Image (tube, rainbow, N blue to C red; front, side, top):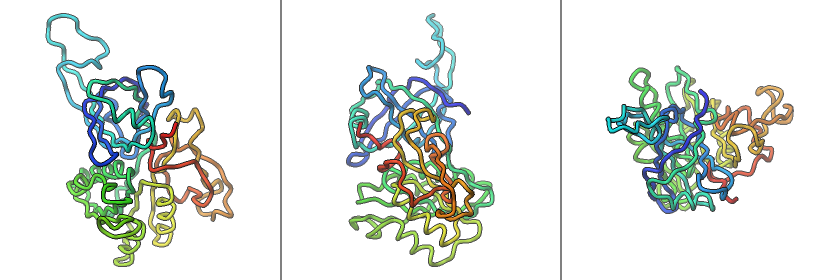
Length: 316
Protein backbone atom coordinates (compact mmCIF):
# COMPACT_ATOMS: atom_id res chain seq x y z
CA UNK A 1 0.00 0.00 0.00
CA UNK A 2 1.30 3.47 -0.89
CA UNK A 3 2.29 5.70 2.03
CA UNK A 4 0.20 8.73 2.98
CA UNK A 5 1.64 12.26 3.05
CA UNK A 6 -0.38 14.48 5.32
CA UNK A 7 -0.61 16.75 8.33
CA UNK A 8 -1.16 15.17 11.74
CA UNK A 9 -2.19 16.75 15.02
CA UNK A 10 -0.50 16.08 18.35
CA UNK A 11 -3.15 14.94 20.83
CA UNK A 12 -0.85 13.79 23.66
CA UNK A 13 2.86 14.01 24.40
CA UNK A 14 4.09 12.82 27.78
CA UNK A 15 7.31 11.66 29.39
CA UNK A 16 7.01 7.99 30.35
CA UNK A 17 10.57 7.57 31.69
CA UNK A 18 13.58 9.88 31.96
CA UNK A 19 14.21 11.17 28.38
CA UNK A 20 11.59 8.82 26.87
CA UNK A 21 8.32 10.20 25.50
CA UNK A 22 5.06 8.82 24.15
CA UNK A 23 3.37 10.95 21.47
CA UNK A 24 -0.08 10.37 20.00
CA UNK A 25 -1.02 11.79 16.61
CA UNK A 26 -4.28 11.86 14.68
CA UNK A 27 -4.50 11.99 10.90
CA UNK A 28 -5.94 10.22 7.83
CA UNK A 29 -7.28 6.71 8.19
CA UNK A 30 -4.59 5.12 5.99
CA UNK A 31 -1.94 5.81 8.66
CA UNK A 32 -3.48 3.03 10.76
CA UNK A 33 -2.72 0.37 8.14
CA UNK A 34 0.75 -0.56 9.24
CA UNK A 35 2.73 -3.72 9.89
CA UNK A 36 4.88 -3.98 13.02
CA UNK A 37 8.35 -2.72 12.09
CA UNK A 38 7.19 0.06 9.75
CA UNK A 39 7.81 3.74 10.51
CA UNK A 40 6.78 7.34 9.86
CA UNK A 41 8.82 10.32 8.73
CA UNK A 42 7.84 13.29 10.92
CA UNK A 43 8.64 16.87 9.96
CA UNK A 44 7.74 20.38 11.01
CA UNK A 45 5.07 22.59 9.48
CA UNK A 46 6.47 25.94 10.62
CA UNK A 47 9.59 27.00 8.74
CA UNK A 48 12.64 25.13 7.50
CA UNK A 49 14.47 24.61 10.78
CA UNK A 50 14.95 21.72 11.34
CA UNK A 51 15.10 21.06 7.62
CA UNK A 52 14.99 17.26 7.67
CA UNK A 53 12.18 15.07 9.03
CA UNK A 54 12.88 12.35 11.60
CA UNK A 55 12.09 8.63 11.18
CA UNK A 56 9.99 7.24 14.03
CA UNK A 57 8.92 3.64 14.62
CA UNK A 58 5.18 3.13 14.91
CA UNK A 59 4.31 1.75 18.33
CA UNK A 60 0.62 1.17 17.58
CA UNK A 61 -2.17 2.60 15.45
CA UNK A 62 -5.94 2.39 15.36
CA UNK A 63 -8.77 3.82 13.30
CA UNK A 64 -12.08 5.15 14.55
CA UNK A 65 -15.08 7.23 13.51
CA UNK A 66 -15.67 10.85 14.44
CA UNK A 67 -18.49 13.25 13.74
CA UNK A 68 -16.20 15.93 12.38
CA UNK A 69 -12.50 16.27 11.70
CA UNK A 70 -10.10 18.87 10.43
CA UNK A 71 -8.58 16.06 8.35
CA UNK A 72 -11.61 15.77 6.06
CA UNK A 73 -10.83 16.70 2.49
CA UNK A 74 -13.81 19.05 2.37
CA UNK A 75 -15.37 20.74 5.37
CA UNK A 76 -19.06 21.40 5.59
CA UNK A 77 -19.50 25.11 6.23
CA UNK A 78 -23.24 24.85 6.90
CA UNK A 79 -24.86 24.55 10.29
CA UNK A 80 -25.85 20.94 9.63
CA UNK A 81 -23.93 18.23 11.50
CA UNK A 82 -20.87 17.07 9.58
CA UNK A 83 -20.90 13.47 8.32
CA UNK A 84 -18.98 10.74 10.08
CA UNK A 85 -15.38 10.26 9.00
CA UNK A 86 -12.71 7.68 9.75
CA UNK A 87 -9.42 8.92 11.16
CA UNK A 88 -6.32 7.26 12.60
CA UNK A 89 -4.56 7.61 15.91
CA UNK A 90 -0.87 6.72 15.81
CA UNK A 91 1.44 6.36 18.80
CA UNK A 92 5.21 6.73 18.66
CA UNK A 93 7.78 6.33 21.43
CA UNK A 94 11.02 8.29 21.18
CA UNK A 95 14.08 9.20 23.19
CA UNK A 96 15.32 12.77 23.46
CA UNK A 97 18.85 12.67 22.07
CA UNK A 98 19.27 15.74 19.88
CA UNK A 99 17.72 18.95 18.65
CA UNK A 100 14.86 17.42 16.67
CA UNK A 101 13.63 15.16 19.47
CA UNK A 102 14.07 18.01 21.96
CA UNK A 103 11.66 20.06 19.85
CA UNK A 104 9.24 17.13 19.67
CA UNK A 105 9.31 16.77 23.46
CA UNK A 106 8.26 20.42 23.84
CA UNK A 107 5.17 20.06 21.63
CA UNK A 108 1.78 20.45 23.22
CA UNK A 109 -1.58 19.05 22.06
CA UNK A 110 -2.95 20.93 19.09
CA UNK A 111 0.37 21.37 17.27
CA UNK A 112 0.62 20.12 13.70
CA UNK A 113 3.37 18.02 12.12
CA UNK A 114 4.03 16.71 8.62
CA UNK A 115 3.90 12.93 8.30
CA UNK A 116 4.75 10.42 5.60
CA UNK A 117 4.01 6.74 6.08
CA UNK A 118 3.69 3.96 6.89
CA UNK A 119 7.08 3.32 5.28
CA UNK A 120 9.41 0.35 4.90
CA UNK A 121 8.90 -3.37 5.31
CA UNK A 122 7.72 -4.89 8.56
CA UNK A 123 8.19 -8.23 10.29
CA UNK A 124 6.87 -11.40 8.69
CA UNK A 125 5.52 -14.29 10.77
CA UNK A 126 5.15 -17.63 8.96
CA UNK A 127 1.90 -19.45 9.68
CA UNK A 128 3.68 -22.53 10.97
CA UNK A 129 5.73 -20.69 13.63
CA UNK A 130 4.90 -22.26 17.01
CA UNK A 131 7.37 -20.32 19.14
CA UNK A 132 9.01 -16.90 18.76
CA UNK A 133 11.82 -15.20 20.64
CA UNK A 134 11.54 -11.41 20.62
CA UNK A 135 14.61 -9.36 21.59
CA UNK A 136 14.48 -5.61 22.19
CA UNK A 137 17.19 -3.21 23.28
CA UNK A 138 16.33 0.28 24.58
CA UNK A 139 14.23 2.30 22.14
CA UNK A 140 14.00 -0.82 19.95
CA UNK A 141 11.17 -2.01 22.23
CA UNK A 142 8.20 -0.25 20.51
CA UNK A 143 8.19 -2.28 17.25
CA UNK A 144 8.78 -5.49 19.21
CA UNK A 145 5.78 -4.65 21.43
CA UNK A 146 3.73 -3.97 18.30
CA UNK A 147 4.77 -7.37 16.95
CA UNK A 148 3.83 -9.07 20.24
CA UNK A 149 0.38 -7.48 20.13
CA UNK A 150 -0.08 -8.65 16.55
CA UNK A 151 0.88 -12.18 17.57
CA UNK A 152 -1.54 -12.03 20.50
CA UNK A 153 -4.39 -11.34 18.08
CA UNK A 154 -3.52 -14.30 15.89
CA UNK A 155 -3.16 -16.70 18.85
CA UNK A 156 -6.92 -17.22 18.79
CA UNK A 157 -6.50 -19.25 15.59
CA UNK A 158 -2.86 -20.32 15.80
CA UNK A 159 -1.18 -20.88 19.15
CA UNK A 160 2.25 -19.22 19.19
CA UNK A 161 4.40 -19.14 22.31
CA UNK A 162 6.10 -15.76 22.86
CA UNK A 163 9.22 -15.17 24.93
CA UNK A 164 10.62 -11.62 25.14
CA UNK A 165 14.16 -10.64 26.09
CA UNK A 166 14.19 -6.97 27.05
CA UNK A 167 17.49 -5.16 27.57
CA UNK A 168 18.80 -1.72 28.48
CA UNK A 169 21.62 0.12 30.16
CA UNK A 170 19.50 0.47 33.32
CA UNK A 171 15.98 -0.11 34.60
CA UNK A 172 14.95 3.29 33.18
CA UNK A 173 15.66 2.02 29.63
CA UNK A 174 13.20 -0.88 29.83
CA UNK A 175 10.12 0.06 27.81
CA UNK A 176 6.72 -1.52 27.09
CA UNK A 177 6.92 -4.15 29.84
CA UNK A 178 3.25 -3.78 30.79
CA UNK A 179 2.13 -4.03 27.16
CA UNK A 180 4.27 -7.11 26.56
CA UNK A 181 2.82 -8.86 29.61
CA UNK A 182 -0.69 -7.94 28.50
CA UNK A 183 0.05 -9.54 25.12
CA UNK A 184 0.79 -12.82 26.89
CA UNK A 185 4.56 -12.87 26.50
CA UNK A 186 6.94 -14.30 29.06
CA UNK A 187 9.56 -11.61 29.75
CA UNK A 188 13.24 -11.93 30.65
CA UNK A 189 14.98 -8.67 31.60
CA UNK A 190 18.67 -7.76 31.41
CA UNK A 191 20.36 -4.49 32.38
CA UNK A 192 24.02 -3.62 32.02
CA UNK A 193 24.17 -2.02 35.49
CA UNK A 194 22.17 -4.77 37.20
CA UNK A 195 19.36 -2.43 38.31
CA UNK A 196 16.77 -4.93 37.03
CA UNK A 197 16.88 -8.59 36.10
CA UNK A 198 20.04 -10.23 34.81
CA UNK A 199 23.20 -8.09 35.10
CA UNK A 200 24.76 -8.07 31.66
CA UNK A 201 23.78 -7.99 28.00
CA UNK A 202 20.40 -9.15 26.79
CA UNK A 203 22.14 -11.36 24.21
CA UNK A 204 23.84 -13.23 27.06
CA UNK A 205 20.48 -13.78 28.73
CA UNK A 206 19.02 -15.15 25.49
CA UNK A 207 21.87 -17.60 25.02
CA UNK A 208 21.46 -18.84 28.58
CA UNK A 209 17.83 -19.57 27.81
CA UNK A 210 18.65 -21.37 24.56
CA UNK A 211 20.90 -23.92 26.25
CA UNK A 212 17.81 -25.75 27.57
CA UNK A 213 15.51 -26.60 26.02
CA UNK A 214 16.79 -26.58 22.46
CA UNK A 215 14.54 -24.55 20.10
CA UNK A 216 11.95 -26.47 18.10
CA UNK A 217 12.16 -26.56 14.27
CA UNK A 218 9.39 -23.95 14.01
CA UNK A 219 11.02 -21.37 16.32
CA UNK A 220 11.75 -17.87 15.00
CA UNK A 221 13.85 -14.96 16.31
CA UNK A 222 12.93 -11.28 15.89
CA UNK A 223 14.92 -8.32 17.18
CA UNK A 224 15.16 -4.55 17.20
CA UNK A 225 17.83 -2.47 18.89
CA UNK A 226 21.43 -1.22 18.64
CA UNK A 227 23.57 -2.55 15.79
CA UNK A 228 26.07 -4.40 18.08
CA UNK A 229 23.17 -6.27 19.70
CA UNK A 230 21.71 -7.24 16.32
CA UNK A 231 25.12 -8.42 15.07
CA UNK A 232 25.67 -10.53 18.20
CA UNK A 233 22.23 -12.10 17.74
CA UNK A 234 23.19 -13.10 14.19
CA UNK A 235 25.94 -15.35 15.58
CA UNK A 236 23.56 -16.83 18.15
CA UNK A 237 20.90 -17.46 15.49
CA UNK A 238 23.44 -19.22 13.28
CA UNK A 239 24.65 -21.37 16.18
CA UNK A 240 21.15 -22.54 17.08
CA UNK A 241 19.87 -22.59 13.47
CA UNK A 242 17.19 -20.01 14.18
CA UNK A 243 15.59 -18.05 11.32
CA UNK A 244 16.17 -14.43 12.35
CA UNK A 245 14.66 -11.12 11.25
CA UNK A 246 16.37 -7.92 12.42
CA UNK A 247 15.02 -4.38 12.31
CA UNK A 248 18.01 -2.18 11.50
CA UNK A 249 18.66 1.38 12.60
CA UNK A 250 19.69 4.26 10.37
CA UNK A 251 19.69 8.01 9.97
CA UNK A 252 17.36 9.00 7.14
CA UNK A 253 16.64 12.20 5.23
CA UNK A 254 13.73 11.06 3.04
CA UNK A 255 12.41 7.66 4.13
CA UNK A 256 11.67 6.28 0.65
CA UNK A 257 15.02 5.71 -1.09
CA UNK A 258 15.75 9.04 -2.78
CA UNK A 259 18.64 10.33 -0.65
CA UNK A 260 20.60 7.02 -0.57
CA UNK A 261 21.77 7.88 2.94
CA UNK A 262 20.85 4.67 4.79
CA UNK A 263 22.72 1.93 2.96
CA UNK A 264 23.58 -1.40 4.54
CA UNK A 265 25.97 -4.03 3.07
CA UNK A 266 24.37 -7.36 2.17
CA UNK A 267 25.47 -10.54 0.45
CA UNK A 268 25.45 -10.23 -3.31
CA UNK A 269 26.08 -13.84 -4.25
CA UNK A 270 23.42 -15.66 -2.25
CA UNK A 271 22.85 -16.17 1.46
CA UNK A 272 24.40 -19.66 1.44
CA UNK A 273 27.85 -18.16 0.94
CA UNK A 274 30.10 -16.99 3.75
CA UNK A 275 30.97 -13.31 4.17
CA UNK A 276 34.40 -13.93 2.59
CA UNK A 277 32.90 -15.78 -0.39
CA UNK A 278 29.92 -13.58 -1.06
CA UNK A 279 30.01 -10.56 -3.26
CA UNK A 280 28.97 -7.35 -1.64
CA UNK A 281 26.04 -5.18 -2.61
CA UNK A 282 23.96 -2.63 -0.75
CA UNK A 283 20.35 -2.20 0.25
CA UNK A 284 18.47 0.77 1.71
CA UNK A 285 17.19 0.51 5.27
CA UNK A 286 14.23 2.79 4.51
CA UNK A 287 13.04 1.03 1.33
CA UNK A 288 14.35 -2.55 1.54
CA UNK A 289 14.08 -2.67 5.34
CA UNK A 290 14.10 -1.70 8.08
CA UNK A 291 13.41 -5.40 8.69
CA UNK A 292 15.92 -7.73 7.00
CA UNK A 293 16.57 -11.44 7.00
CA UNK A 294 19.71 -11.48 9.13
CA UNK A 295 21.32 -14.11 6.90
CA UNK A 296 21.51 -11.50 4.13
CA UNK A 297 23.31 -8.81 6.13
CA UNK A 298 27.12 -8.59 6.19
CA UNK A 299 27.39 -7.82 9.89
CA UNK A 300 31.19 -7.76 9.98
CA UNK A 301 31.49 -4.95 7.41
CA UNK A 302 31.30 -1.35 8.72
CA UNK A 303 27.92 0.06 7.80
CA UNK A 304 25.87 3.19 8.22
CA UNK A 305 26.38 5.31 11.31
CA UNK A 306 23.97 3.98 13.86
CA UNK A 307 22.60 4.97 17.23
CA UNK A 308 19.85 3.47 19.38
CA UNK A 309 17.08 3.10 16.85
CA UNK A 310 15.31 4.49 13.80
CA UNK A 311 14.30 7.99 14.78
CA UNK A 312 17.22 8.49 17.15
CA UNK A 313 19.92 9.62 14.72
CA UNK A 314 19.20 13.16 15.73
CA UNK A 315 22.38 15.21 15.87
CA UNK A 316 21.62 17.50 12.95
